[in-house]
Image (cartoon, rainbow, N blue to C red; front, side, top):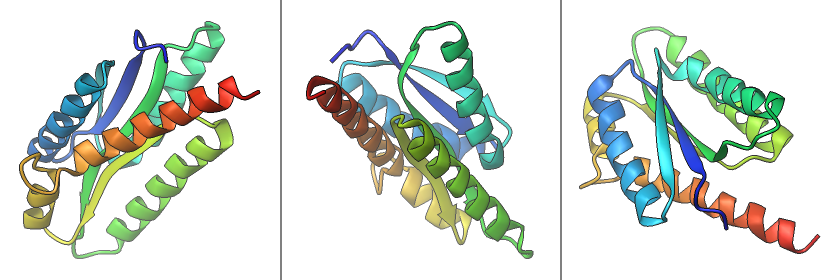
Length: 152
């Protein structure tokens, strides 16, 4: 496995403290695995899939695979309207489409929570560490990419 490649963390920054906490868990797992990383901020969760696709297309145009994998990061907290439903559904669908349509390693680290307290607990590396879980998922998919290249 080529460990000189980076993992791109695309992070929705609408809830800055949550984004930073998620990133702490992600970065820890990425570094333990020997990869480098880059963090790219976007306004919120809805913009994350578009930024991942932009990164993929920019490296494809340059005929370079700059990133070994991607991690979608952010948080959506339920409010008083159905906006939450649309953002959660369409963001997760777009990320899944990128993953399956292009066969790239994408870790899903976008929290969908009922309230801020849930988000804080899930983002904290000392508690639920969902950022670390998303990084582990991405790393496992990178391993599978390498495995399937070897058995061709």
